[in-house]
Image (tube, helix red, strand yellow):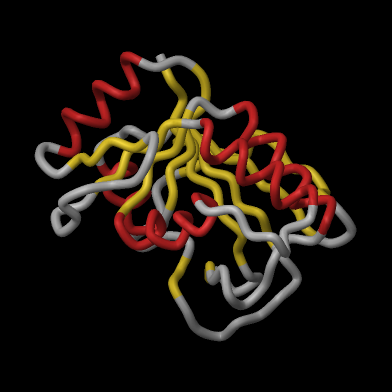
Length: 176
């Protein structure tokens, strides 16, 4: 059975915004290793469209960016959307009964599957499908944006913390 993990970069005031701050070299290296080890990713439409950036090679990429792209392309993606009619390579569109479809993915797969995006994580968390939450806390205050928890924070228990790079702390929680 797969383990569903929701993890994102977060500001000190609780927001996620891929345009406001980026991971440094050490944290990006961590994300590359994580992507290489993951079975796959589950995305909502919005974040999937952002991540499609990694589908096409860019001559300007450095070696770590090429490594991340290769790992991302290798893993399977499940995309939850009512508006998309098709998805890119190595991806499956989920448009119907999300609870049943993700339950099947979780039951049929092994390893870790990333859950991408706060809205999708809220929905899957409410269904009891998220096994772990990872907050990559950055020393940045945004003052606005999309909150890490898109709804009421579920009851959680801290199970680990780790300094990654010079200034990012990973906090790992499981449902309480």
